[in-house]
Amino acid sequence: MSGPKISVRGLRKSFGRKVVLDGIDIDVGRQESLVIIGGSGTGKSVLIKCIIGLIQPDAGSIKLDGQEVADLGRGDREKTMQKFGMLFQGGALFDSLPVWENVAFGLIQGRGMDRAAAKEIAIRKLAQVGLGAEVGELSPSELSGGMQKRVALARAIAAEPEIVIFDEPTTGLDPIMSDVINELIVKCVKELGITAISITHDMASARKISDRIAMIYKGKIIWTGATAEIDRSGNEYVDQFIHGRATGPIQMEVRAL
Amino acid sequence: MLDFLASVGSVFFAFLTSTGRLAIFAGTALSHCFRPPFYPRLILRQIIDIGYYSLPVVGLTAIFTGMVLALQTYTGFSRFAAESAVSTVVVLSVTRELGPVIAGLMVAGRIGAAIAAELGTMKVTDQIDALSTLSTNPFKYLIVPRLIAGLVTLPVLVLVADIIGVFGGFIVGTYKLGFNPGMYLSRTVDYLQANDVISGLVKAGAFGFVVALMGCYHGYHSKGGAQGVGAATTHAVVSASIMILLCNYLLTALLFANR
Ligand SMILES: Nc1ncnc2c1ncn2[C@@H]1O[C@H](COP(=O)(O)OP(=O)(O)O)[C@@H](O)[C@H]1O
Ligand SMILES: [Mg+2]
Image 1 (cartoon, rainbow over the protein chains, first blue to last red):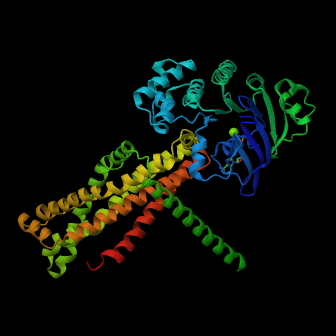
Image 2 (cartoon, rainbow over the protein chains, first blue to last red):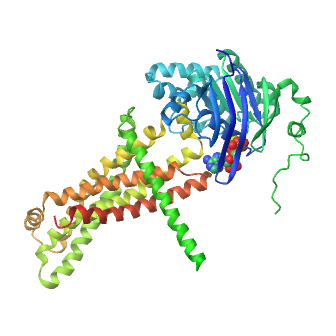
């Protein structure tokens, strides 16, 4: 089948009077790794939650493999959600369950696999992200931030989804651990042949894991292009962002005290 | 004056909105109670959490309630030489009224708060969204087991509370007030009707459901980090307590008065 894997058109979402997404248009190709960059609070998480189906958008179209999903009912939307795996910004590991059961959760609860078989897979997935079987018996709260991110990554890919979404996978990690995570993401995307959407404001990470980059600002996609072109985008917003300058067209909303 | 009317209006409107939202939430939760998948293991764990671990608290409050009830009734009834009615008053008050209400309120504080805090934390750390992405419906996985556990566990707890409460009255009646133990017990049983106990247990089921519902509702809708979870916990306990007292009156007035 041809055409993009995901196609978003005119996506809008407001919370009360606050407009967060103001007409987003974006396509993600098959087996492509797209990175969305943008400042904090610009609606990156809201955008991907709309795409997955965790948030109902106010208007606009979202097509998955050419099929419209934005207006699906709750039940059908849950089915399309199975195509996705997601690494949440804070990890979102279930702290009432041991690590291996976190990783195996989608297999046991979602697919009805028996626990022993699911545990084997979970331990294999943990090994893929560089964690030993003994980590599987720990509780998530006993892990360091980097290990939690790796477990969350293992959980996101455990059910072998077609699309994986990474929400700020490296935020809050030291540079070396960030690079470990970046490598894991690249490896997963290449080995599993998945389509990936990542969110980050870590430019080193963005350059490493992406085929294409899109920048979101004030509820719209203001630039998209191949990763290699980001340094000659000719867009002052993008330039300001990737160089991390305080002055420029993007005005941080710093409240005068 | 207009300002005043406007604020009264907006409070009233906010009340209607939140009542509607709660009704929709309850309806959604109920509809999920009857559609698979079911999670019997989770229901069992909630029953143990809600029921077994609440036994000490409920038992203690019940025994003291029964004891003080015997004392107070004796004080009042001895003024017109009706001391012999003490044991009947104790058993009727406990089974019809105080057992369910006191157990309900204690459980609201213990369980309503715990449910709201747990679900609230899961909400603000995206764990509830994570459930959805792992092909698991949060209503079925988190909320239905708690509602069912609340509904079936409180009647059992209340039955235990009834027995302990009556026993508390018996202790005070025989040791302190000098009733003959056999007489006390036979008077306890003689005037007791099945309906007295059943009405209390029906109420208990309703209260258990209300406590779990308010805990789930406020937890599920909490936002804004630790502070939001704290607020959800408070709201869960306060609203569950008020709803219990309200339901108590309504159920008594509609179903059980004069019966
Ligand atoms: N459920 C919600 N209710 C109300 N406001 C929300 C909700 N989710 C996000 N927002 C608001 O939307 C804006 C964008 O949030 P988010 O997408 O998390 O930003 P980021 O780009 O940092 O991921 C924020 O201002 C946030 O307050
Ligand atoms: Mg975010």
